[in-house]
Length: 193
Image (cartoon, rainbow, N blue to C red; front, side, top):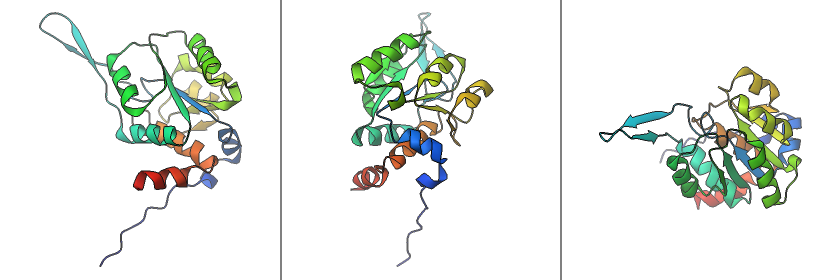
């Protein structure tokens, strides 16, 4: 009987020590939506009555990662400048706790989440891709940029993912956090059971 090929998982040692130290403190993972949970494209489908329907594509590995994060006790949330029923639906599907949409200025939502979760800045990770994310990244204990983020965001990040937004970049950030907290093996094993 042929043996199955095992893919060597990315381990904590592959993340810089300073990133792992920050990740160990994280209790809440917040993120932008367009360009982070999606590839940044906003598809508008015109209907016969003159209205439009917005369509978004979400990566299944990000969704699985968000469920694993929840199982490991990591609280999650989105803060988006746009308001989208697709985001509301996806948040429900993957168990995102904090959902703030239509927030062009994101700081007020960030502060509300901190109060509701009872956490400090150093216990928050924020994943962003564009300029409106910078103020939150400057406050967060772990600032993460997806690989295809604008240069200013990549420069402000403590960690830049190898994966793009909408292409499992969020999953990579989740793995970084859970591996630093020694929760990855447990939660991954639980998912396989």
